[in-house]
Length: 407
Image (cartoon, rainbow, N blue to C red):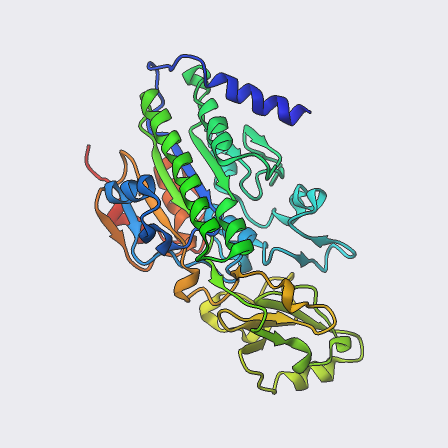
């Protein structure tokens, strides 16, 4: 009930008069659109996002996600500048040898809100708060936890039923209070594009309708900021793309090793694999077998380009399917229930590339950024906020050509 009241109060605040004096200098607003593949911009369905890309900077060909190309690892990468192997959110579902008997999953609110899973890194809102700035974050993965003892000033527990338009109304509500209370950094998360991509596939009408919905929500934000005289730096990102999958393209993990020899609690494009006691030799033998559409590595032998394999939460062996294929086990996987779209594949695949757009008074127009990676977003955010962000795996040089240097 408290959550509903908070949402209603924010929506009511939007009916109040716009405040034109004492506007903060260049607030930074981060928009995260889960599953927005870079080439979705080419469909002619997102006029607002396309205009912002033309007026500002865009990652040419998309932004390369970190491995694994799934939601929580990459949304945390975007705000920490660290690969998942370094920030600790190594998958959407994971275990930790230091936390016996516990499993982190997206649907477990208790685990999601426990900072123990997040404390290996510092997200940009924690850095900003400690630098004396104010922050407001809506639904961004990690914002529900008091990471290193600090939450955003304004936040709400994730509620998927809140529409895209309502999320923007909440964000605009942050800017209807007295100007001194406006956030210096704000972030809003949308999940509808990813959800429809999973349920109906990346080429579906439902996915296209989600693109329109999010684009219209961003238009409301842009217009609402303009009506308040706020010139904000907007940074619009996704965590990964989306690929078509079908129930007739399943790599059966039990063709590679007997299912009763291993403990594997992640399926989809990626499987974490540990041997059950007494089956260590079987797992070693399996690593020498070739199975079509499947690669498996000891964690210390994962290809270096993935920057993955040293964190304690990663299993002894990691398996990855070829693009468009799904890992399964025969007595646990129903081909009829394979979703028509998913991600988690090789982050170099064109289908995994994520959108990146930046536009605002601090951003040059007409810039196309080459070879941009998700780790490069956090250094840019720190620069725009004029704070010293923790040094991570990203490079400010990757976005330097997009940063306006003159008045």
